[in-house]
Length: 149
Image (cartoon, rainbow, N blue to C red; front, side, top):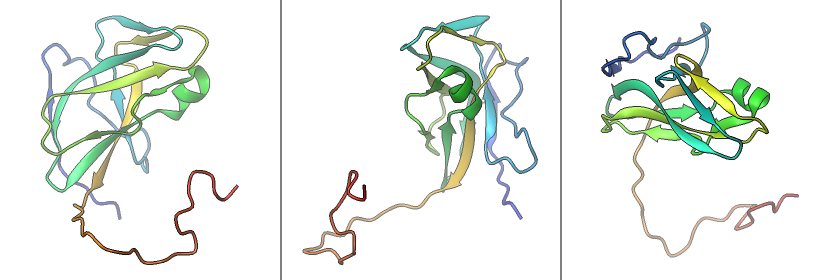
């Protein structure tokens, strides 16, 4: 059984023609986000651009939303998110924007209504730092950044 939560969403003026974020399959974890560009936006190879979605959301306290790339755009065009995943905190009320980057070799055109990213809702917990003189030992220890190669 998948937990469901209600999330308030506000369409920004002039975006009433666009769909709300939606699941494309019955068991999808992420809802697709749609581009709210006026007409088209071109992203040149190596360029990044903030693409509006035309929505603002009120994520419930105790949750966050992650904005993630769409694998199809990454595979076919080399287009992904600069800050993947991007986090939408429960207290943010501005427009949801998606920072796309074109790692491909050709200009990428974003058209109004294109599916540009996914949004996934998660529960969050808050960490409380406790200063310790020593940390518990593990087999890995302080090895990192490729130490298992």
